[in-house]
Image (cartoon, rainbow, N blue to C red):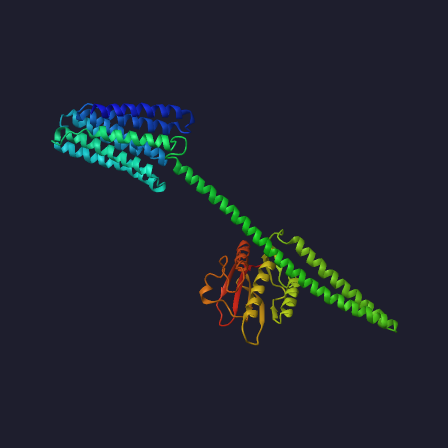
Amino acid sequence: MIWFRAALVALLLFELVLLAIRLPLTPSKVELLCFSGLLILVIAAGFVPDSTAALGLASLLILWTLGMYARYLNAERRAWVWHGGVGVALSIFLFVRLIDVAETLPFYLLYAFLFVVLALYPLVLFWGICGANPHPLLYLYLTSVAMQLAALLYDYLSYGSGLPVLRLRVFSGLLYAGICGLLLSQEAYLQGRGWQGLHIRLGEQQRRLREAHTRLIQTENTVMLQDRLIITGILTAGAAHEFKNTLSLIQTSAAYAARAEQEVAARQALKLITQQARAGQKAVTELLDQLLKRGREEAGRVDLKTDLDLLLRMMRSGCRREGIQLGIDIPDTMGVTFRRGELEQVLVNLVRNAMDSVRSQAGGSERKVMIRARPVEGQGMIEVIDSGAGVPPELQNRIFELAVSGTQSTGLGLFLAKALVERNNGTLACIPTDRGACFRLLLPAG
């Protein structure tokens, strides 16, 4: 036994030297104090005299320190509960010794019951730490703690109960000291990489989540920018087509004026040239205004009939080139509250998807897309309806998810459209139909 106790003293001195070296680098002096105090008490228990009084007090003191240590590691705030529990057990222990019935079997059983109940508190807290940070060394530490408590209880009960006196606290203390040495040397404990590694890992995970969220927002902004560039290209192509028609009329009128022999006919041709030039200038000016304002405006009233006139004409022109009939049914005075550029983006996405669906349909003579708007219960309802193949049943509930598409597209259009609609306090839904597809927007009335 003397050699085991000598080993205990040697380990204690070695670990106290490590703790002294680590003291200036320790961010939490409270944690170091709890760890050091528990280590000293566990090793000192191996030198406690073989008496129930000394061993009972030492066991309660070790249990109290262990609970304080576990509380600190888990940031548990209810310290008074733990102090009260240990205080009640200590009061009962002292009272029973005062009335001289401490050496009876009922008291041994009562002490064992109180000790086990109190020991569950720190063991459960340590188990929670191990569950959140499953490192083998932490499980070894928990095992050594449980063995030390069991050894203290056995040694206490062995004095006067007829059990063999084995002094298990010496051997369990040696195991505890050895594992603490491993914790100090390998895990650089008390410098933020031991038990505190749990909190550091959680902080690292939170940092990574924040970075991932930032990257997601950046990616979403990039995709939205790309989508706006696509829409800009569509508008530009449509404007170029319309302007090309205007230039053709101007060229035809100019050629007619050059050949006209009568002055009246020449003046009429020049007047027509002037009107077409103004129309072309207006179309280009409106396009440039929309490109400059896109993404910068605040939500406001958008008159569907007049504010979206250029966009609707461009979409109608694009549909006509594809051999698709675009029908527009919008009341003259209907308006919604929305960011104009984002509403245009949503409508272009929906109409573009509808055109793709109509093009992909095999057979059938009807090639039609319809934009219909109605005021409904204080809101503005806009529907984009097509005569295409429709949305597959298996995609009905997932059509607005990222990268989900019923065609060979990227699946970003509907995802971004829904995000933009919800950003403007509206809703976008896919309405089941017997034929084709219907996408319905419900927007705040303007």
